[in-house]
Image (tube, rainbow, N blue to C red; front, side, top):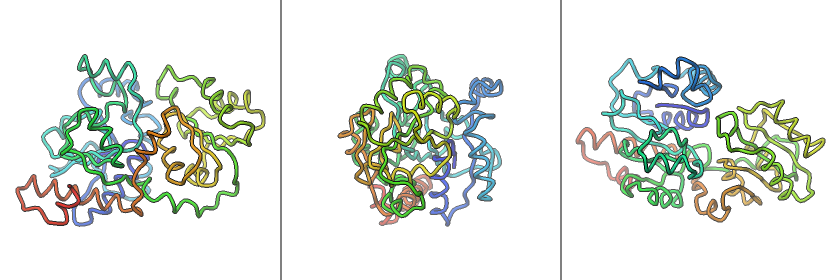
Length: 330
């Protein structure tokens, strides 16, 4: 299991728990080749692959706290299957292994970098998550919904590689309605870490103007992305929303469950709001987002993905497919 962000890592942990009949090991995301040289210089610390960044620290802390078996970079064993939350990099030591890719959430918009990568055959990571799924290095790609299946087919992913399983962490949003967050009835603005991850065209001023328009005078609460520079973000927010409550570390999902309306830029958390029937605003077309909202299957996505993994293992070993696994992979 190759983690990355804490969301990717916790999702794959759920899949690992559902693979109780297999020996499972975990690793934070990693690099090799020239990217590893850049990594050692600290130039990738703003990404999930960076040795010294927040993503790696939080993932490593989680793996340690959960007392999970860790094999850094998969060096210690000859694995039958690799499960990863990102195919922007296909590491050298997994290129000849069966791979299952698991969608993390929303992908970045198809901007100039995306089109340059596709037309000039540049490395996928240059365009960030907008190129998710385009490696075609995997046997199966487990996606959030039928809407996302159509979305990835339109990008050129073969239909027979895609399996609609739902995604852990966003497949049972109704349970979030029972929570201990004390506040209710506000407009929640969920900010992003676009600047911290070097998406240089992001404009906080533009987003705050967007939020002010959509809030339309209602009480606003801001939830910062965990990777954001909180002091800077708070100053900017208070310049436009004097006195607004700004939460840096807090239960985002519970805050969404208790809000009246949700405002985001390009964030997967909008799907929680849509699944709960909230008024939602995003830079993306909200009608399109509704079609792509992750399936709500009562929290069974990890088990469905585990079935896909077993099916890929069976095919790789030449074993006959178990009927229920064949149904899961269809």
